[in-house]
Image: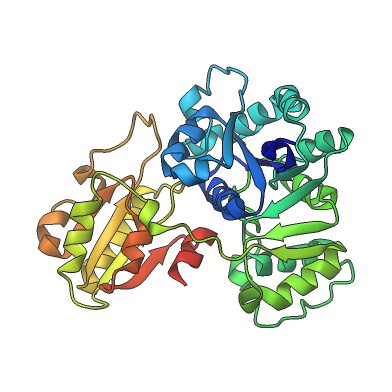
Length: 360
């Protein structure tokens, strides 16, 4: 029998956000010696960004599958991802993904995988897999503690206290009116809660979580009780820093090597959050008053006609006042490599799951 036919074939379908795609990709890289073959499904713009991160060794066990979204006037191909997507188009992207259901059904039927691993925001995907007798498992990529806290609140009609008192939300943050809910960056649609609950419920017996027991073991156990499913940790899935490559990284790392130990702050708010003018001014003032060295990564939405020039995005005369204490970087920096440097003494972050685990 052909060796390939003996392999267990797994189809992975993450939500179209870098914070979801990255842990799915790291998970796909792990089983190279376990006789697994992974089909990795996403839109062309996302696949083009991650293909360079795949080594020749991993390419033998990972195959990329393009998900074609319907062509919508307000959603050109470069917006078929949350990276660089203006916030007002998030609903449109969610609808476009939902409209791709028939195309995804064809992918499922054609590949006929042995296992389907899906994400939190496409509840129709596991139902399609189930209709084809394909086992479907949810991979949850955010904080298990936050998930158990939130699901406790959603499910607990008696208003009993969360069993771990060290985890709570201050009254000043309740209620939070935002496009993000308790689970992180979710599509701002009215059915977000329903989508999440359906995705959790459709998972076949187990749920994979991007965590490890030493960090969130008791929250895993409690979430298992709440959902009546086994919680299986994948480990932190921290990306290999050596796989990061960018044209400006040499300058960035050389700048850091000249700084003394723990003297520099790294400032970055993830690949998909864009600071308002007021937020930029406040952070700029704080960094100026701190008198420490810093690397600050600034990002703006793709195609934003009102995007300011780089120096105009900062207070007048800011770069001149700061002098050599700063290194400003636009759009991207080699985060994993930066955090490894001994000169980094702090990280000002949006506290995305990947950023937190890389810091740890």
